Length: 217
Image (tube, helix red, strand yellow):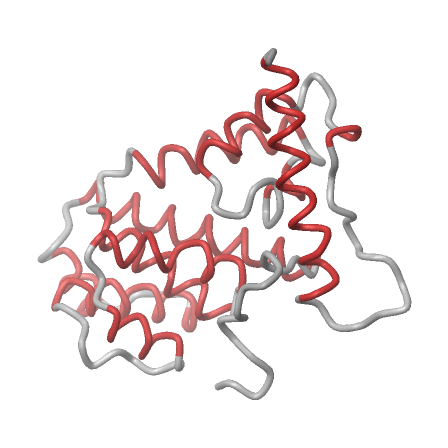
């Protein structure tokens, strides 16, 4: 099968799941979705390299933020380049990087960020107890000391728009200057992605349990 045929088959499979997701994981509405799920027929030649990369890394196919980033191929490609660095080449240890992403996902109650990154965080070494306490909107009592430093840094920065000397110094005891910059970039980028998905009312794949249910804290 030629590359274009393989890509078409992958996009079709990803699209089929996400079309169901839009119906299953969003409130019943009389109006159409704000951003209809892209299909193979919608993908331009400019978008094809992006789609091939997305399908190689994404747990949600071309749904989630990718369904939105593909609408702006030039900007979307730059975001993918940044995400490639922040996810796979960051100076921050993977466990702390993923924990920071989950912390932002929890702040936003972002179904997609949480669904996508919990398995990665667990594999990177974040404990299941810590993940569950975070999901319940608690400051996890089971955090490792460096995770606690990351959590307090992220929460303080986004709640107060500043970071105290005590919080910064504690984080600096675990991370160097480059790592703190990379951590802040990761946190800010996933804050932006959560906002993008909230604006678009993106869901998660069908048949999957919603991480955050109505009435949850």
